[in-house]
Length: 419
View 1: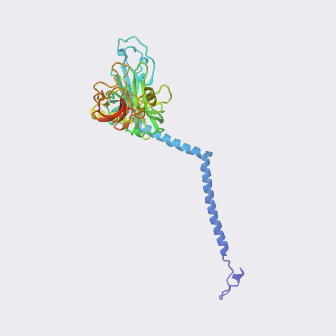
View 2: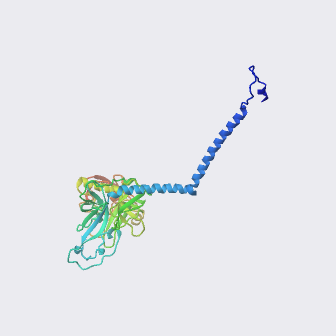
View 3: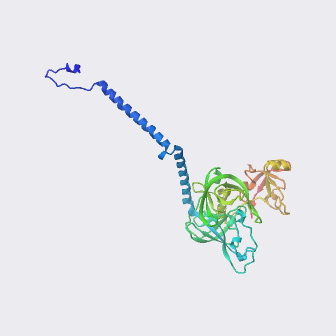
């Protein structure tokens, strides 16, 4: 301040004033900047720890789990909203007076014993008067807006029964069975309806084990459009569906899922999280829990295309009876190859290894031949012969690599049509 007091103007005395010193100005600026920086840093750290602790003291891991669960639930809800209108219930009615041995009690008649098991039937007195009863129920889904429905063959297997379709809005329609797949558990049904909501197909060959799936169907024949969810537990399974005194059917290349499938779910869709059909629910393993099976969408789509093109479902026909070769079987029987399809004779006199007059017979295949490849595709436990042949149609000529009496050879076979 002394320095300023010595500066006097010629115009007289100027009142003393204090101009801020330079050093104090810089110090204040530094303090302000540092305060801002520490404030920002402190706020960031507080937010970080607040988020880690979660709302109301929840850990960050809990928040993340809640978010994942919410996203998963939302996806399933969206699938159900999208797909449910296209899923139908199929009611089976039968005049029990015309069913030998089943009498008047509808509980004695269980059309789904074949695939799901059920009560043993007890012989009853034959009824003299007509007695039409609802004896079973299954599921299906629209595949076109004109009322074309896909379901399981075993749902509509009885030619003497009548079938009614109930849509998701509760309306009933008389159904007509138009086609059945002779080799697979699939059938096509139609009702008189316009602008039906229908489902699209996904490529089941792109399914991954662990992938989330949703099943919709008329569970137990009582609970329409029941929804269950699970994952793909296995791919390319081969199972034998059937029950005591009911015959059996071999299903190959099917999808295994832990989504709950019950009687009545038969014919309903197995869906991915985009609401597309990846399979058609068909059977369960009665020995376990949550072990269900669905026919892949590729098979279903092929059948629909075949029907729309030909007016019926047609499949390629080779005309052989076989067992798949395993390393154990190869060692036991000294087969010379540890994979492939071994042509074998059945127990009956007419259970030929090679059907006389069949495409296989015409091509020179004989009993004990082992089919190793079809058009270069290996035939083994992961690609059984029937699954490989699904890729071809009647009239196609394929080259089969065959192990015949100790040596391999190539055989050309022109496939026929399965009857």
